[in-house]
Length: 81
Image 1 (cartoon, rainbow, N blue to C red):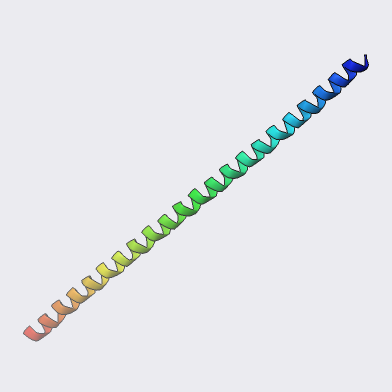
Image 2 (cartoon, rainbow, N blue to C red):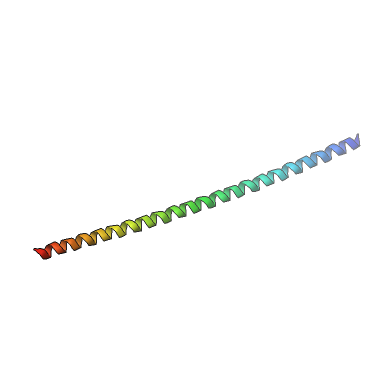
């Protein structure tokens, strides 16, 4: 009887330790997943920002070019008069 009780107690301890180990592993896995997701989101946002900045730069350059061409045309027309 005492032997069975000892065995049962040992089994109980073993199962508890296994459960704890599994929970720790799951916690670690979830944390790593969260970190990975956060990194990916950070990268995505940075790329989006870079793209936006480049597009704005391009737009401003095109606007400047258009303005300069219009000014040149205006001056040429004024000269003709």
